[in-house]
Length: 180
Length: 167
Image 1 (tube, each protein chain N blue to C red):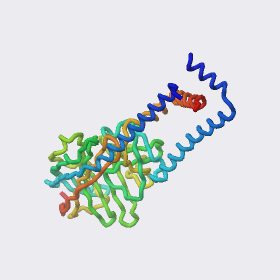
Image 2: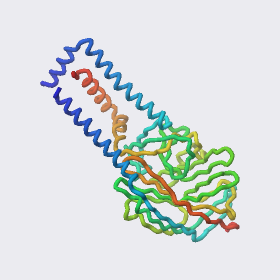
Image 3: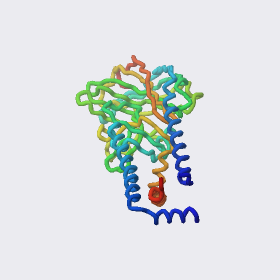
Image 4: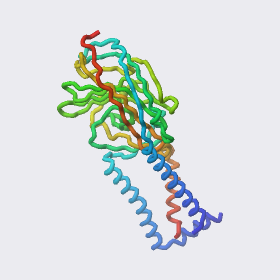
């Protein structure tokens, strides 16, 4: 009971000034996270600089729950690169490898075909009906870096929202009750 | 000052920092090794070569790949993805890359190999430009690390030529 009692006491003994400083420090945490995210967007040129792998279609290279760092540059897309792309009519972007590239002589536009390393066939079945190739505008970025396991945090949080609320609640309580 | 919460917090912060630092160092250590891979591809036969009903040409070929990629493996290497692509230029396209075969090398012991195979993916041109066409075969590899930055490189082999007639 000691710890809980203390916590309740500390909530009771809150002063206006203290509440304000804590609100400010909480705000600092949130805004600095936002700043880091936006800065990453600027540096990598990709609208989502970090993605979590959700399926096993690239195993054993990338497993579910691994994190990929994306980079979007003006460099042309080439076979072998791992790209993240959106297909019309699908909400979740897909991370697969480029296996065919045809680049136009006059316009420089590209036709790209992708395939998951662990899939048997190419991705034409995943594309929109009748779509044979991906174009540049479908592609959100190419994977340049890799970090294992860390993405499980977000997978667990999206699939079991209760854990997210417990975590946020606990963190909030900690911030409110902590004293220097 | 020395409550349980603070101790747990300090421990977690230190743990995460040390882990992150180790990941960065493991990734940086990949730069220290200088790989010297070798690859050789022989086209043994053009099995058939025809025009599809849509007007695109398709070819099937048999080839032999010998490669030694053992030097690509460091202690931070999870696997090496290797593939062979045909690369050529046509009046319409400044670059065509068509993957013919690929494989995943899980460990250093498997990195020296020699295989005899037909193309795993269809070799279809955009149009019909392949008769008598000179093309390159390029061996590409992508090193997937246990953590950190991914690497890629290639060996270009030139001087291959398509048959002049359909067969």
